[in-house]
Picture (spheres, rainbow, N blue to C red):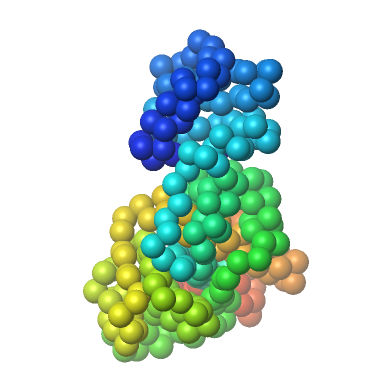
Length: 279
């Protein structure tokens, strides 16, 4: 089974398509469902929920219907999205992922069911992340392993700056590096809003004539940001696996005080409350 989130307009188009083409409807099984399609003759199985989520049986027929329903934004050559992983964990790196998707990329990603990594269980996320790394689209990760992260954090701290300054720097660097490699007439950049002024400061030297910058809450609902979210988390998990193997520990279950002092700066973010004073 595959899932995809549709806008209210797309959901209405799907309902109209079902009626117009006489697909076989069956009784819904919960108050959260709008309709169920179980048309074995045409090999179509679809469940539409009031939240906008649509689950289908991933057949050629069902995929064809979904493809006809979803909208594609054609006003930009590329839409960029960024997201980070590792900010809230005391161990492992900080990963900022930036992706640049064409309209066709975004349509394909929606069909794949790409969504916010926080809404995906770990097994599915790893599978989805692995699949994304195999696809040919433009992306650039910025990975700050603990030793580099700690050094960078101290540099910002000495300047009287905060973690948000560091995050703004990382997101902006990933965005500017990727934009510099693209050829386009119009591009849009979507950032999950966390500190508007700091991001604007860091992107201040970016030419804005043909680049639209949008900072919005819950930006993971946007496909480029959702893809960046999945990839950032995928990379983070893989890098933690690498640290575990290299140092013979399990960071996901370990306590900082149990890790040898000489190893701690290589695996931990030293400014975290549960880490400070140990190394």
